[in-house]
Length: 539
Image (cartoon, rainbow, N blue to C red; front, side, top):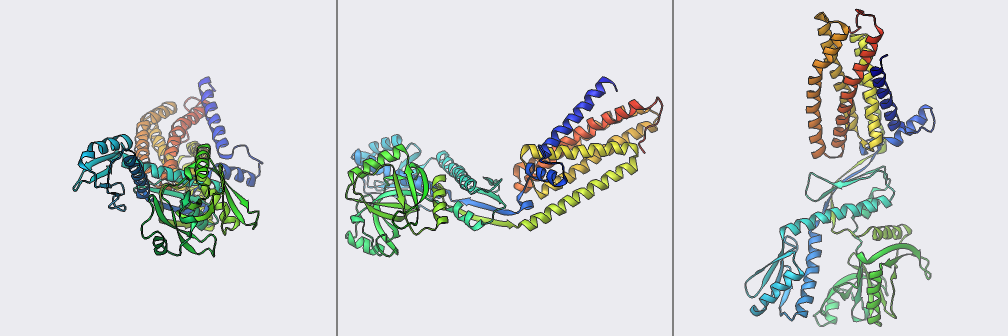
């Protein structure tokens, strides 16, 4: 064996060993079951093979826009009050369809310049136009509106991922769904309680601590609450439902401050604990340094007033402020152990910036996934054996060359899945089978060209050289066009389709290596062992 051929053989053997490591890693044993266990640890199965839940969620991005415009209204009121700009009212005419539109009514003409400067300074993301009857219309700039909606989707993805990760779901897929506006694709393999996971993902869990007016009184309904204040709510206050903390726990209505003393972004940590009085589960929360400082200042100025713990716009607890409170508090309620754990989990993972709606849900049982694996593997094995036998029968000795290249191609493809962490789906298995077919096609092109050169009277070394040289361009053309098609599938496809595109693409790249380089090295090795003029076994 000449030196050049020896280096090529070393490259092939090294490639084989590297990708075998990608498939099995360091095996825990050499028995069939141990190797299979090592292989399943390295190659991750998709939802359709191991079972689980497939969800498509719609992020209600207008919720995030409404929250932003609500904060903008509060800033406007504060700033206009401090700058002594008169106004009659500030409203959102259509919060459902145009949540970013704000109308300021009753602004005197002489204050127009001051108002425009205020908006430019404090609300630069809004455009302002004067309207009829001394009104002004504010609308968010298109670029800022689009950015806010996209950030809402990105934050929702991150929040859902945090919650799912803390549930211990292995290998979840949580990403933006490219086939719809503001949609999220969630795939959760092997979960045993999909209803609980859905509830945790969907909960907004917005924690706030607000002042409760009228000595923390709980009214039986909104009419009773309004009657207690003569039909006019105090400035910067709203009605909010909750449970009657001091009574039977039925639904009640409170008058609470519109702006929270501290909110969810001030939360540092939440932990499950036990009440020292009732021994029931409770959730202890701890605030950040800044949140704790503001909470401490607020409570020191409102000793004797009432505070409410608000979760998802519902009053959960009401208590009197007896002294300054630091950076922690407690949420009590009729929680089960699991509910308390879930609430702490949701609070720790942050609040969703907007509500979500389930557009699609599919569940694949583990038995169906096992059947898919069994059928897919059987199809791959039968197809592979049929191709290997055909190549041996039709091309004789050269068929062994093709079979070795095909087996190496399969090893490289599986090793790539192990190294990359790509998920093997049922369409991915189809991609593996198609790769085998493309590999055979490449070998057939080369072998038939070699046969033609031999029939034209060329010597075996010359026929092999010309066969590979002439078939190379055709092989590259067919592979490049198929890879481009697979790339388009990957860009626009969903999870299973992407799995097919990934396996097909890398299988074709591996095939270029095995069908051209490896096959040529095997031919060169066989020819180096033959006597001059000895025939080549190629059918």
